[in-house]
Image 1 (cartoon, rainbow, N blue to C red):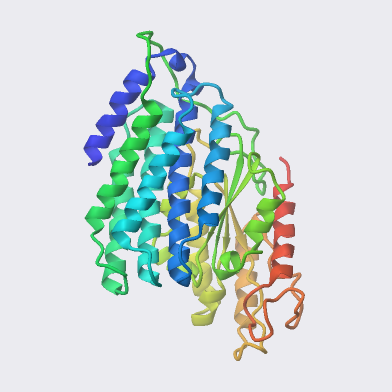
Image 2 (tube, rainbow, N blue to C red):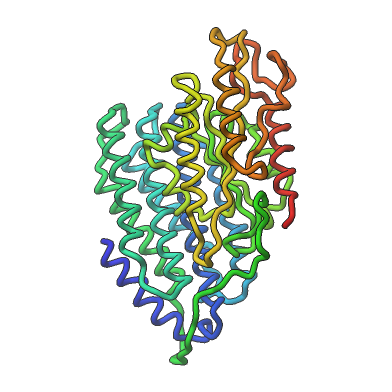
Length: 416
């Protein structure tokens, strides 16, 4: 399959870039951005079904509609560049994403409650997004798709899919090879739709795009990847994604998504250790190519370990984000958030000495401009104005999330 898709995109590029759209280097940017957008929507909609399976509440049409709206916004950004190979293709690609969702629902099942099946939806969505990111890079650079990139997507998917099967609890037995085949057929169809157009025989010479953004300051969220929008990925645990007023949602509501996009990658119950052990960050970087990453983990590490062990994993994630560079040569700007207190009471154990030690390690090891303060403004004891409920010493309520959004907004407002 990898060889076939590489041949496919190479052949289509040879035809598509021979026409008038190839007369400028930016002629490749529009279909590249659209390939990325299609991958993001497929992952977004897979997560909708995953969330439904975690709660047992059934699929949410509102969730799927929000994903579809994001695709429309991304398409508008790409079309504004005025150099797309195919015009009026949003509906066709959206239909292909919808067909993928239907196919996955038919294969994996959607009736009932199953964390295992929810994970399989996420893994399938990540595979689609990751492989379309590989194609987007190839389209942008006018080269055949990288087999190494596709192989990386495949290894990530196979390891997770097989691991979920081994753990058990899925609604139905899952054929990892079958799901991969379904996803890859969607990817092929999307690439074909984006690159197939009537062309002339005019030839041209093109060069890879270069960065046109101003140098970013050490603690700024700038448009590093040059796609016209600032994209900040939030990596976190339940205090990133737990409730409808979570700070990524609040923060996004304060900005035009055509200018700033907040990517909520919170994973309920996760830790820095689980992100490292599962190699979760790499495929997300490949899928979304964000301008910046905020790593807000550590609470669940402290509950089971030490400050030193938690920082070792946080540092690995920070370094991994910093090492991810865009096609134009600019690289991701990583941030690390300090860890909020765990209130005891109501929590039966006082973890705060280790939390304070971890925060000291963060502040001593990371440039001050890259530290996002999620702890100093927290009250000394449990307070209903920031916390979720009086029997829970760990999870923020809407008031706490609003303050987190304020802190992140101050970072976004920095300028080089």
